[in-house]
Image 1: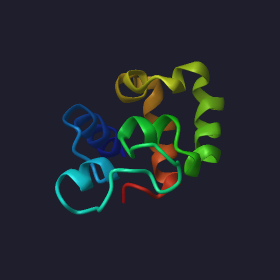
Image 2: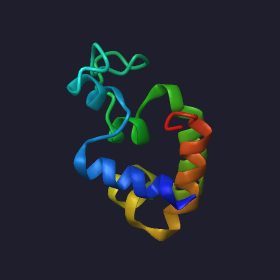
Image 3: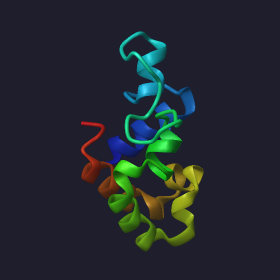
Length: 96
């Protein structure tokens, strides 16, 4: 369970995660762009805070954590965010 948060934190800091920005950089994806959000690069920050594909899941996260859900550092480092963040990531089925 906590492996997800550890992976997100590690990848956020190193910018290495299986999202389009990193995959494009290593030649595994033709573009760094988010396929759901025109003009947006698929980064950890985009995935967590603004990708339209995960608006419903993010709404649940925001209902739980309120404004703090809009802070990547809070999401990745505060113990109160761990369980809601894990539920968010699991519900997106994005990092499996």
